[in-house]
Length: 478
Image (tube, rainbow, N blue to C red):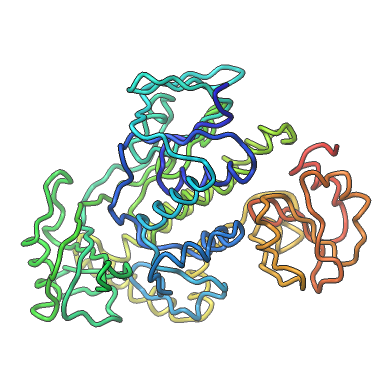
């Protein structure tokens, strides 16, 4: 074997996975077909669950130190969700994808992992022992596992002949990175009476300290073929249609047309090959859910591959990647479709759509409604199916970042090992048998017992039947 895992694609999903594997002590080769990292901003923000996961690895503070990444309000179908609707201590941050990729590239390089660029995968084959990957430059690599993080047009998915059912794109809208004049800082989604609309989101500042924004334009006549370039005149016309003379274009940095295609791969695992990120699911980029969902795919898969490589993975642990992440991806596709309907992307001004939106907006003003939508958009609503979800509200959910006195839970997770919180100091003898992969902590803390997986999800809580949970998630004891 040349390496334990080949990760195909050095975007946010691939780099997040490479970091998880690095932390788990797994030899990894990260490849990408591009000769250099893209300088396009792409996705515009990070959700609570992703921020929390980076905090668990000690990467959040260094990432936020890279520039101006303000806390911003989220939205659902253009309906703002106030900050107080998010009960989590890490609210949405405006951190563009280009910043995340640059940060991870430097972080991985500092730990000896450099992406091998100009490596375009052209073929793969797998057998009982591993995967052989062939590249256009003539390189051939052999690994125990391979993960496809190579985007919506995944070559790996194509070579697997994996089903990718769903809906093809039926329209396009414009997404552009711009500097604008005359913008009220609180402006987010704006519609005019004939159905034209614009959405604005902060992207931090350029090197001169000037405010950058993501501009999205849609409405009647806006849907053009993706291959037609977006021009400055088109942006100016779209702005004047929605805002009149109040808002004007100062600089167009980047623009593209995006579609409303909505697809999800049938299986996330094909033997020794796994699919993650846009290789597994595509949809309209609302709330940066594509990037965040992909990074969360990587966080779910990384520790499981580590367990398999190190030989302690229990039976079917790798299968739980599909069982947990496929429903999570499907839920994102559903909420994006609902949002696109309520936002009236094509600007039809259909009275039925407008009536539904009006009622939904009223419900979204209720505190419970705001919290539900904030959880949905932030990734905090995800609850993985696992034993114990019927009997304990914490099981299957992200562990709360409790202050245990000596450390926070997120700080304990930086080793990417399991954590057993044992406040009454009653599980020492049992836990000692798994001490090579699970740390025991929290003695004397004001909390209840819980077992936390390396990805930060609670997999057992309460007082009984701890040993079966350790067996299920951490394999046979030493």
